[in-house]
Length: 373
Ligand SMILES: Cc1cc2nc3c(=O)[nH]c(=O)nc-3n(C[C@H](O)[C@H](O)[C@H](O)COP(=O)(O)O)c2cc1C
Ligand SMILES: Nc1ncnc2c1ncn2[C@@H]1O[C@H](COP(=O)(O)OP(=O)(O)OP(=O)(O)O)[C@@H](O)[C@H]1O
Ligand SMILES: [Mg+2]
Image 1: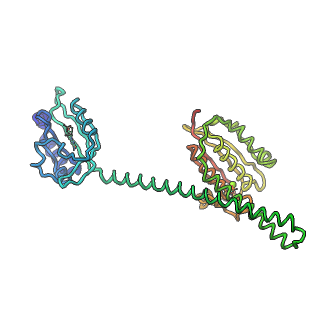
Image 2: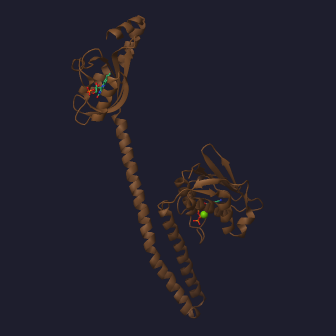
Image 3: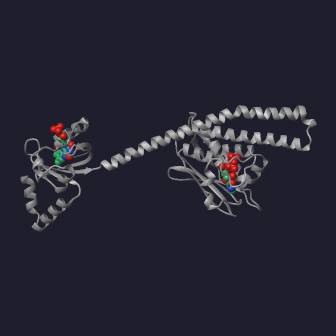
């Protein structure tokens, strides 16, 4: 204490009063120990330290702070503190302590060594903050995230099993409808033929939906290596696979870069966005679908813009949900494409975004991080 006293004596009286008042009113625990005495006893504890630990000042003064420790206090944290104090240093530690009534609390402890003019340590100041509520909230949040993860995985497995089990009876329906058409077709009147056609096209649509559920629920499950992909070449291949319309209307503004990514996911992203641009965003009068990119600080950003009908702002979230379409679902529209794009971009570590104005067109953009193989 003499060193601290000497120091304090040098401070003008008004400042000492202010300093004292600030410490007394502080809503975190503050203790000062005397490092010159055996076992580093507490020589000062502010009122809040007494308030939150429940100990009275005469149960505190003269004791080492370890009286706050108990059965479940981490032994290695105690060893760490001892090791640092032996080296005459301060430290930060979060440690389980106990109040006078036995209630455990998480103590965020900051200890500073107070040196005199010769660099000698005579005192330590400790600041104790009860962070139990924060630690409990974090643990609760982690538990909820874990449970949600399990539910999500359970749902994906459930969807996969159901979709898989529906395939066989559906194949049966379609095969028997075809058998009726082949063997009894001539005996059916116009209406019968039409009904049979509905059965077969509905079976086809349902098969598409089942396939979509299966591919969506298994996305990212298969281990796939990162590889260097020439996105220009890949895009050209996809455009060609989309048919003659693709080649005619899709323009690549400048040569696209080589990215490092998982191939199947990259294909899903470009294929779905380009086929949507052709399907929904075909220019009514003139104008093309354009592909461009930017090099940003940590990633590539690709843009696919069309001059089609555009998408209303209020539908921006809806379009990325599985099985959501903005028009009546047809045979070639299950509503899974953008959900697959979103999941693919996220699995690649990027972000997907849409900008659109009704009547003016849409721009879908996505990022792919710079990675190395
Ligand atoms: C200023 C100061 C404040 C301290 N405050 C606490 C505290 O609030 N809780 C605690 O468990 N240990 C606290 N300690 C650490 C213990 O006093 C002790 O140094 C630690 O248990 C390691 O030593 P030991 O192995 O001799 O017990 C504090 C130490 C100092 C110097
Ligand atoms: N470029 C676009 N311009 C206007 N509307 C679009 C565009 N892209 C998507 N949409 C709208 O978003 C909906 C969802 O698209 P998504 O790709 O998920 O499904 P889909 O194309 O209907 O079916 P799928 O891709 O499964 O064959 C579409 O049904 C369409 O209404
Ligand atoms: Mg689509």
